[in-house]
Length: 287
Image (cartoon, rainbow, N blue to C red; front, side):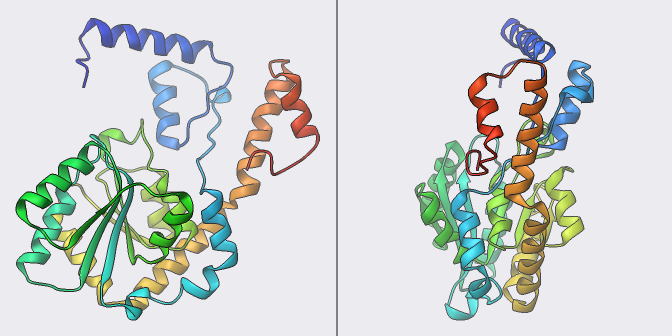
């Protein structure tokens, strides 16, 4: 990380401040980001519009066509292994010590039939993979990035999805994989010691659990509890779908972008092709 007292850091911050202050509108993807922008750059709320990332088309299509036949049945009843999965980038900012500690507790207690999958890549993905190989940990599987269509198959055939963040990252980064997970109705264990949109959603809709960074013992206990409680897994899945429907993905995102472009249009900032797109009222253009 760049030293905050360095000339490079200060120059980049000055450039960043200029960009934000001269922008007509700013679009963060979460409430924590919005608060940081307002606080750090002394900007008014009127020029900031939150537009969250949403699930990929493949996730939404699966939810519409197949979820009723799959999500309410615990997949673990149909196979020997209970699958805990992380899909996506595991970069430098994603800690894995909490997860790795829980895996070691499971192995020390000789608990069988729990499989951990990491699908994706990144700096800490490679680092974790190296540690697992060196320590000969057998119940962790590493797979490379796959297509959105293939991701659906892995998501559906998992029991729990892991999402990882940290308190000091919540106002600059957001794990958007969250939207795809709840869209297909999977319970989430969120490893994070801060408060953000995901923690608020989990507390309100009760589709998962929040584990503070570093608390491997609690993570272990939650995994075992869910493994032994198929009815609870079903309840969490239903709650995840309830949140997904409440978000109203297509209409919500479209309306927010429409509001943004209409504001720009009224100020003559937006070019003609975009005005014509929205004048046609074709909802498939954005989504």
